[in-house]
Length: 369
Image (cartoon, rainbow, N blue to C red; front, top):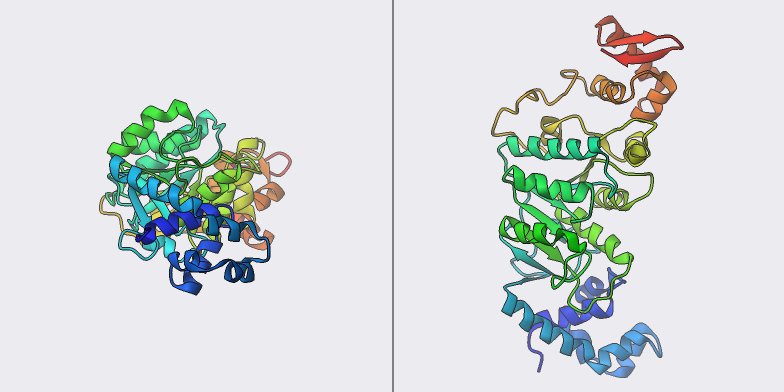
């Protein structure tokens, strides 16, 4: 009655919606999603425990009925279904143990591209953060490599990343925390339509999925898993962007963060990532491309060396970026922001002063010239 492995995979994912590693473990162990639905009650209770709701849901077959309807709806709407092990499943996700066994997409973008860059941040973006986000995407566009920009369609930095990608003729992927039959937030519906034409909407949630906060955490792991690198533009000390960065790091992906003023609560998360060596300080497009071993096809205006303020020394560049954003800070504050050892920081500061890049003011505070 249900010959298609896709139907079984959708049903399996729905039953274990919030135990994200379980569907893949089941498929790895038994060879397919369908195999679970051939087991009898005793076998299922041996596997999941007596009286387990999982065993009960598998036996009733209710989720199989829903899955079959989902497949028909996807065919009707032109929605692609990506099944683990099939040719259209992105290789980037294969190394993520908690990757979904099935997810959906609609649009024109190649979600299997090896040049997807996630740009994420706070919903309450500042004017500075919004402009910096736009400049990050502009710089990536000018590289000539046509990277795909991924984000979460949320307010603030996310929607700015999508809009900037559309502005600079880059494809963009919006990963949703809800099904494709509704857009959240509703105010971004028009942008979602534009993204379908020059990118893609992606989700692992089928129709009828209930909205929970945990959906956003699952959404964030898909953003991080699809992307070669994640750039955090602005973030408070707690937030979804930091979750995405942590997930990206756990997948051994590159993580970058734009530093901000130490007095700006919207930059606390980014500064924390940099200080804890959980992210590389973002200094420009070429430096990012170099970290990824990508080679720019175009000369990027004003960034031919990959550094914004200092050519050839990443330690001194990190210091100058921090000073530009936090003029008049102390050596201790600079040490905290940059995560450079006191010994190395002192030596580099002395050289920067001698070379005329840094000046010391009253109270042993420093400015970048």
